[in-house]
Image (cartoon, rainbow, N blue to C red; front, side, top):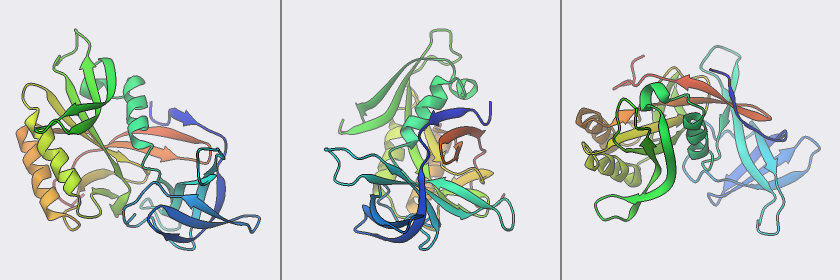
Length: 254
């Protein structure tokens, strides 16, 4: 089922990234020479994918409720698959939850999660009941494991070679999510899904150099029973496709 289209959309507009500023804004020169300001949903450092002078793809969606008509969706980077090759990376952090949900609904993760009866978004959980899990799954009665599933999605674009890494900066929020996933065990299943938003990676590992505390908690979570399922997607000018799952590495060796 690799290569299966998950989302289809009107072709994106290509341009050159001039600058990214104030976290949410990016100036892009379109092919016709026009310079536009696009909304950047990714407020992090965007390590390895923020390439000034590089090609990017924008979505044009004017609306009375939006301050900006353009949104930055993809960035072109050097691919880990070989010299001279490039890869398009998804940079819109609003997409990963939707992509993972579509993969579950399409049955692509049945082997790992079991057949799912119901999917709910943003369900309250955690020690203080102030957190919201990205996806809460209810398995079908005949599933191999009928416990409910708390599933957290993490957009992953940083790489070293063909190894995908998360996080690319210190993330206290991500650390808290790992602790809360461990807390739901063993009554429920806890699943972390790194959404690998590029198709040139072969495996996933914690980004220890960016956040050593997260790496320590990541290994503790796995030892406690948290399941990690890296899901890979390919980004194109008019669609996003499923590229299967990738193995988890406990360090940076491939």
